[in-house]
Length: 394
Image: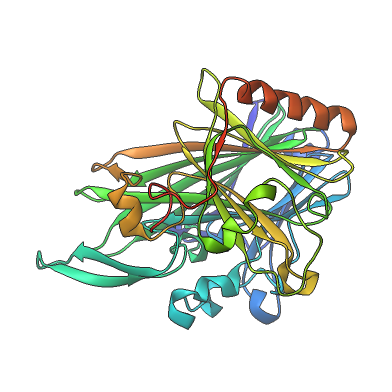
């Protein structure tokens, strides 16, 4: 019997699309694991494909219709994600990206992990590109780019009965005539009984000319990890507030408030410390220290980290964003000026790995904190009290 089993759910090139599917542990050949695929009905979610994976302890939902984002999850009954004011997931057809001065992306924003990119991300604003006639022209870029509102043209489930690994593989193209052509090839995987899911992404330049790449993983968490007294655990080389509003909270940069009606977001940019292999991690722990969510990544792939605080009222979207990226989510022209945009030659690709890990007891949280402190011990943190020109437009 072969170790690998495979099921193709979508293949546009061969006109294949499975409306629904359920794979039990006997089908997968992996104990305690199941995979189900369905197409959601009603409201703004009509037609959104959802793939749900469980490994016995960890459950998470992938949205092929929305750029292979992770919608929600749970670990031993502990919810992972946040409660957005939006009743999602929202089909991209209802997201007008140019609405409200380029902020329309927010109308579909309710995922736990959503990619921002690929050609651009960050604040909406003007950029200059070379058009198909070779002329420099001004264009208006919208908030956080297009990839989150594009559907996968290929989707596959692969199960390895020997290793206990279950993977969801998807491909999404962000491509147009006379414009950049980038392909996201994503593998989202977990193993039986694990407290982790791993995202392995490859972004490929499909065109015969060089392309720019910006990518931020906007990872969003609410209760029970976020509450009054929650703390961000992060090995810091350098950190700075984005703007005057963030300066107001700089003395409590790592602390979180209870839901606060009327709260205005605060954003901080970090240069993280790392180990000898460029690995680093960040974590959000609750006030009791018995629950934490962690993100592990490599600074050679994702050198920038952004903390977004939005501790507003629950009904308005009580959430924090922990955001590893190739860049900071500023205007693209500012990131280009600061040499934080990746240039991909024809056929070239950029690889990223992001691991989400859940801890549900004091011992696990303390081990996580000790690991972060070990990385921190190699570097004395510098916390700036004001915005810095290298991090934020002044």
